Image 1: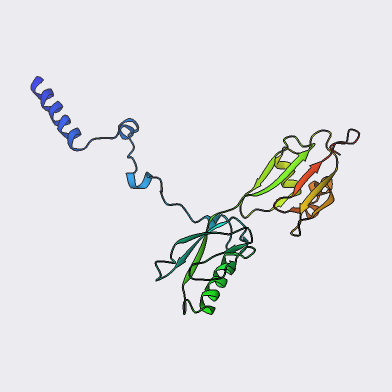
Image 2 (image 1 turned 180 degrees about the horizontal axis):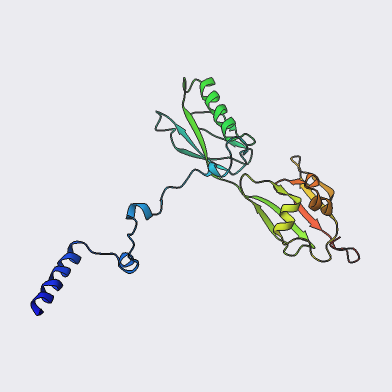
Length: 225
């Protein structure tokens, strides 16, 4: 019997040496996933997937990546959209304005520009967005947590969404808000909006723009409607 136990222990030791069990498998009795199935990906996905190529419009300070087939010098070059909305592309003497275009529209324009300038005959070019510029809305006044709201890429900013992001109107928040917008000519425009109507009827909610400021004054007599 004693010799039998020694033989069994020896066989078990040999088995463990040849086929070691992981701690999790030994504890749970379940097989572990292979390392290749659990390893985190190290590849950074194209940021364009966060917003549709057909609906997202390129903006100043966005970073784009251009892939030009069969041209190593122009391939996988990263560009930043400048303050005037343009990008200085490789081989071109004049900058190309891409701000305001969708990714697909920008791609078509770049292909056309290279062909028109006789740089490429029939280029295969693809553009991806690698980094989005921040869109910010300033919310102040009688909201529960006034702060600067960052709008994610591909999403719209509305009066209701930014006030809600600030915790909603404070108990003494007024019904009418003031929205200040900076215009392209350097001037500012102020207009009023009915916050109660915007909350109660989505069709009356107001779409905001990057750089807008929302101010909700106090109303000690009729606050929070």
